[in-house]
Image (cartoon, rainbow, N blue to C red; front, side, top):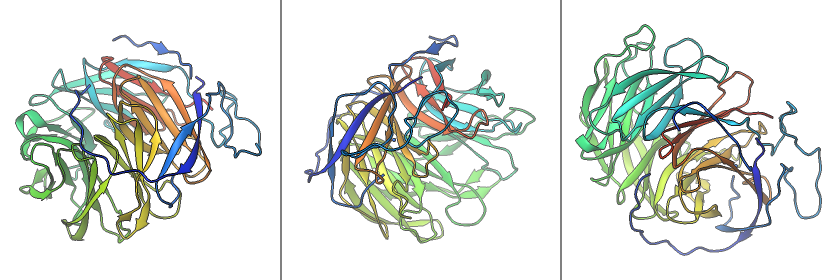
Length: 426
């Protein structure tokens, strides 16, 4: 599958602070293949983008005056910088409305499996992998009402991955403890998590060897921290106020002090809130930064390999993705907009071409496309490649699904009643 490519020139500008925006609605069952016509940051002030006419084949990153190196060719087996090629997308039937996806070895057989949260069906659906990039339907597990996020993590310390989901309609996080063998779980344990838990992140926040949870409580305008108490149990939530309607929360050491911090994407304020660790499992508000209107998902990655984490958010109602370049000490420069069109929903960082710096990879909910943004922070020209996927994608994840050393992608296509698996085909 060849990408549809656009070349984007970075030019300096100074954006105005965005205002809040009105909320927007959230967004084939048999296995089929899809055709296609068809991702770092300089630490200057904000930059805007202008697009040139699209090309039809992959090209190496260029400046205006020269092109060097062999042009990448999809399917020749050679991974080259700037080359983004995938085999035709394979559709998986997962349920009527998958809104979140995670990749992990759930059954401990050495192969990656897939976990989906299905909002409409009120279920977690599992797909087991065979190590070749192929998947078969696994267990379907009921949630409490309608899950919005899910992850796989060993919450009880027994060496097996458990399943954790956020269920905003009932104000609970649910924990499916993996009791094995294979994919056998205890009934879900309810954990009180505020009023409307929408998004989850998991890590050892207090250094005690137990997994902790961070939860974005959309209704309460807060991030909740639930410290692990052992055996899959959690202490009562500690509430940290953030901006208006946090849609996502991530865990990352954004100030490089060796302790994990929290960042929320506050969709109704067009901001992110940074909560810096000030001790084992405790945090202090380090302020808000303007980003694109109505940010959805959020990612932290060292996009320009300067040793500092940058932030990126996807906007659902604006026409761009926003990048906040890391300046050190938990500080960030003004946001840099990358014009991609409305409807962006989720974004991750992944080095798809193996050249070192991660690309930003996003899903376009409105267009049903995967978008790869490459060259940020390492070139004056940014390449944007688009690939056709299923309808209404809302989440994505990356891993080497077939053991060939290249990252593959999976998207949760909420309006396509399934998922798309894109295997790398350099």
